[in-house]
Length: 224
Image (cartoon, rainbow, N blue to C red; front, side, top):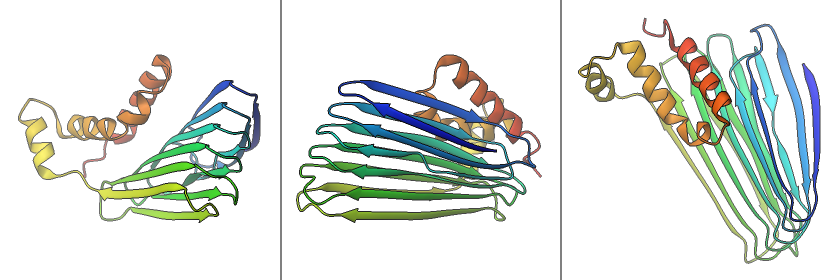
């Protein structure tokens, strides 16, 4: 599957583009998404990836007008035989622009997730701010999570930050939830849904419900 999405955000306009993909496990999902944001405009990409054999998707935002803003919120799930290679690109080409990237990934049964991101602040783009947050949840010893951040800063007064965490589900978390009557599978699904909640809550209600259900289905049989 090869798709291209191009968006132009005019001055002071606000655009949100949401995608949840659940392709069958024999699909190679190679997608190009890019947006151009003019003065005081705002672009928000919300991206959920749970299917396909291989996904390579890096939504980009080109902030070309003063005080333009961009945001990418993404969740990637990789199970057996899956490789989810996702991320974002933010290019600050105008002064006083700001961007935010939040990436959540879950891997189990040998799945591989990767964050691949670019933040660039051009020379002369003064007063820019950017923050990147990458959180990975690894559910077993066979799975992998990789992070490849790249930042290029050409303005002296830029404020830019990157933070990353990698975690596993603690036995104490499962014990606490199971002591309240949940099965082990239900407890793991609850922890995973809590992990991705910062992105899920931004979805329209029907998307959020469907996404949570897809995660629950993926977690079924995860206890070996």
